[in-house]
Length: 281
Ligand code: AMP
Picture 1 (cartoon, rainbow, N blue to C red):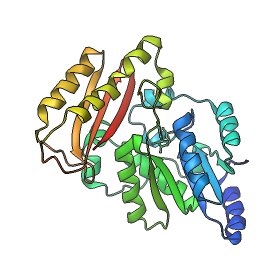
Picture 2 (cartoon, protein in one colour):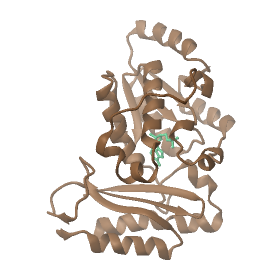
Picture 3 (cartoon, protein in one colour):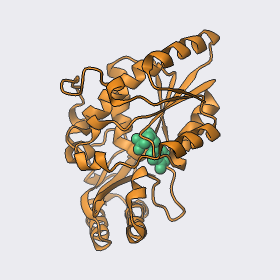
Picture 4 (spheres, rainbow, N blue to C red):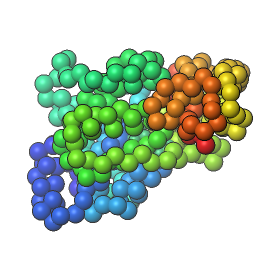
């Protein structure tokens, strides 16, 4: 694995590779890697001649500065995991490399409805930050294929929108959520949970599984109310539990029994905010 700290060095290497004609797969991350990240690497390796991974904890997507400060950093272990997984290139830029003009006057992206709801509503500015960093990363990496996790369902929709808006040639692939054996979605933030919180955390996937198994045609509100209560009883402070159209993320208040849905939840266990979602059916 070759490690690049500057976009210029990475770019020169990618130009050399491009002359060989093979496709480039790209897996952007914020580090503190787990098997979920590595499943994206595996998907990329299967479908591309070379795989680029990036680790960059992007300050502009953290609406809460405390969350940014406490974001887990395990860079040495990450490098080891990526080498073992067979990643070809690791892009490890500094904040100054990514934002040479600073972060004060970055572009604003027309995300419309997508940034007014769910994560957009509860984390103001978050998806603008995601676009700011993804726009730069896609410019630097010029990937044929981009692999991101369905775990961040709304983020997948935002990045698809960005790719269209900026007319990148990159093809977007949403990969399934990897879970711990009890069902908890793998997440870098799980590292911040203490033992008791880790036990409670599984309630978030249980709440979504219950929605998925209990849903039938008709009003969705009773299911959402029950899920919120279940989370509160398990020590969570709930931002939202929602049932939305899987394609548009518009809320579905009454289900026709046919339309593909996604159940989404975001909630705090003390200081740690967890999100998860499940597709229905
Ligand atoms: P992050 O480092 O949290 O920014 O995540 C980097 C990428 O890994 C994003 O595309 C995430 O959606 C994806 N990801 C995070 N957790 C999981 C998981 N449990 N399963 C699959 N992909 C994941």
